[in-house]
Length: 224
Image 1 (cartoon, one colour):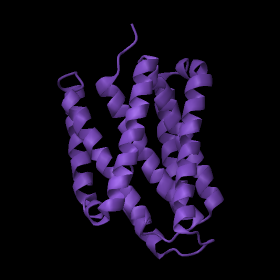
Image 2 (cartoon, helix red, strand yellow):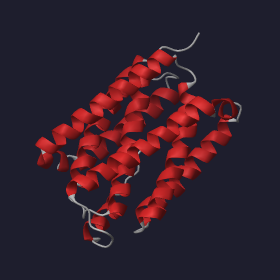
Image 3 (cartoon, one colour):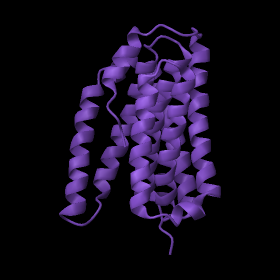
């Protein structure tokens, strides 16, 4: 799930409050917040899978949407790094519920491979965005339109043809590859504060989770 937070992102460009960080410290903070989110997801998948998988799927969806929306709003509406971090944690736990349920259908080797590929792609896209920042900053609208078309096509495939199409998964992978580079390049434009680092980490976290889900959908082997 991706959230359009352009309004809040533009506000962050004007926000210069809070403790100023160096560029290195700012990017390190983004990385550490991302690591926290992924560690939470890993912990949930390894140690909380039993209670999660015995929950109603409807309840999981309700908790996922409610937690994601509240967490996202908390992250982007707060100028306090601690409050934003709490919101990010809620967002990560909410997405962890859905991730744990989704991953339960796939083999461990498939999950490991998808995780590795997602990491490699993320690092490559961040590197590319550092080399070609202007290009990535200019593709935001194209990515948004493409994602909307992909979501509509996905829904049509599921409800009309009763099937998930791999070509749509591949298209979404490419879109979120672009989003990783886009959000990283945009992050470098914001004032280097701890709160903005948490906000930017939330952007990239959602990109990477969506990237992982789609890669796993394409390459994953389902359990017998």
